[in-house]
Image (cartoon, rainbow, N blue to C red):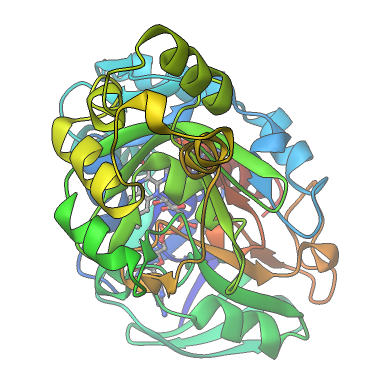
Length: 392
Ligand SMILES: Cc1cc2nc3c(=O)[nH]c(=O)nc-3n(C[C@H](O)[C@H](O)[C@H](O)COP(=O)(O)OP(=O)(O)OC[C@H]3O[C@@H](n4cnc5c(N)ncnc54)[C@H](O)[C@@H]3O)c2cc1C
């Protein structure tokens, strides 16, 4: 039987952060993961360059049924704290856009930094290790693991969400939460591409690979970023962002002319260039292929002077407020996050400790806290992992 101060289940972003921060306080930490490698999502993240934080992180960048919950941890370990660690390790990085910080080289720079922090304070990291059962004891917790029985004072659940099962994601954290009396809010895929199956599918397929700057809105939320047409439907940053606010059956509105008042622009073109065809004008805003396809499939392209005011309004509505109902999303297979999870109303926002079972902690994505796209999800993992580490 092994005995230690802290067991952390899940050696991803939040678990690694929590492990070395607790060990730096002198706690003996056993960090276990069933995968054969720690931090697989870190390696995959940001297209291989890990968007490790966002300079403009604030609580408004997070979705949760309890929106105030994330404030305390985010305030106690900020993006600047993480950036300082990155700088201390000499990891080169840059701002891509909108405060999003990426590695200049590879995501593995961030993972190696976290592992070296763990090694520096002697975190006992065990991979390929599974947990069969957990019991509450008087002094803490007793775990049956593939290493044998382990007892600890504090148990940290850092098992993440359900997205990308091939990277080690499981619902084990939710199972532990339920075992100790916690409510788990319904989960669904977030930051995920839309699938389209109706008559728009042909347009998406034909334009596959085309990216357009748009304003995308749904349920009172809007994001101005690129959308990307794919063989399955729509992706790109603006679509991923809005997907977190979308429920099946909801209409998504896409403004393809975010810098113009569509009707005023069309009226101006009609007045100034009456003999120009609509598709020629659209070709000045979109790729030629997209302009031709829109002109063929959505409107009958004619010289501008031939459009009646009502027809012009119709074109403006299509370009400025294209309404579509996605068939669904690509689901956990490609989602960057899991929305929902352990209900934060039963967890202390200061310590991340369970209000139901003393000595049990939840950090990272397993909780009902999900960030927007842009480095916010990692910042939540770092901040919540660090916050819990001060108390475990
Ligand atoms: C493709 C992709 C790209 C992303 N890019 C970014 C990005 O650039 N920026 C950003 O901010 N966010 C990004 N994210 C989101 C970010 O990766 C997650 O929000 C973050 O990793 C969550 O950290 P976590 O520690 O809570 O969970 P995870 O990092 O998922 O770690 C959970 C760990 O628990 C382990 N585990 C699970 N079940 C068990 C079990 N039963 N027993 C033992 N161990 C278990 C897993 O193997 C894993 O190592 C991306 C996500 C994906 C999928």
